[in-house]
Length: 480
Figure 1 (cartoon, helix red, strand yellow):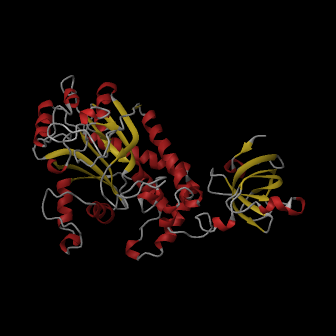
Figure 2: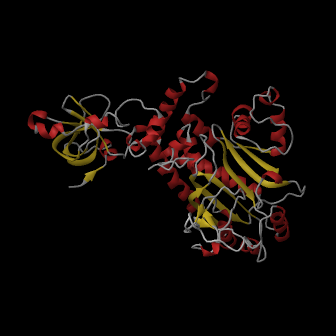
Figure 3: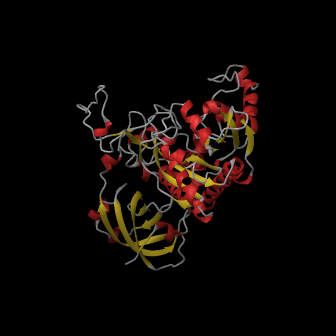
């Protein structure tokens, strides 16, 4: 017998047809009304039991959290709140759930703190909040691939284990098979990585960008979408040690084209979520409104979640040079009144989240693209401008998040790139192949990186990035 999804049955017009549905019990009232959910929708379907005709011992096993199968007839609902329900003919219990144990978990139908939910990450997808987040995340991931495939990009997989540090920050997780208690040493008493599995020091990747550039310079336009890792000791609501990154790279593309691509891409995927996740987004909007009732008025969002998402898709992003942004921040009230944690005193300052959010949320009140940053605060691979002090970098700043995209036009000139690497003590022998690209038909090319979890965080309205990934990896936490 065909098994139907709850989402299908809720739309059914095929009344009196016998159907089968599997799921988990969300509630069982009056020994008569089972609310069943299978994860296909945030909604439950009501299954009506004639308890006088059912085995009492069987019904005793139909408890909150139990996994069951129901066979019955689809009928128009007599009650309010749902259009259809199932008149139950048969129940099969796949897995029981002890009520005493369920009462100590997130499955108990009451308001739980997000911290408590993180402690039970193996059960939190069964809650409405995390079911909704997961479905939205899945839709966004699909939209990412759909956008690039529709626009002639090729999907490539870049290495997770790498010998190079793309960002030059050194915050990398080492990969080794050497015995930590007795590693081999060279003549200088240093660990001899020639004895290691790969014959050299290797790490988990911080970015697939450098390898993606290789393919962009052959195939024109490519993208990666995979896990990246930062051994950065940041316990904040916007940092993870393991996260997913979307990284397109495009040949024959300068900074303006890169900004156009990033803006168009973000609008596409956000619009996809609005069109395909309406029920879940409505639920998450209500959750956010309830959460914000406990906050001071000044900390509440000025517009509701769905309106904020539509605002992003319907308006142009404001493009502002770093130099102009510094002047705005220097003369801002929070800076003059020393309300910023990091005061802006002069050109060349590295912008922090508080500055980025001020520009977006208070000054411009729309997404902002900052460009032409000081070379001294940006990575070695960014193209040096004619002024010799700024690079063709761009960051996209979003409300509630700060930086959501970081990108640049890449330095395509062999000698300039070589000089920049030397100035930063990046060994040529480590990235010889990256330099080599500039010898054989070099061309302007650009790309960006978008942290997928920050995108999911923005679209779902969640305040903490740990709540938009199934099993968050953060300092001192690798549970589950």
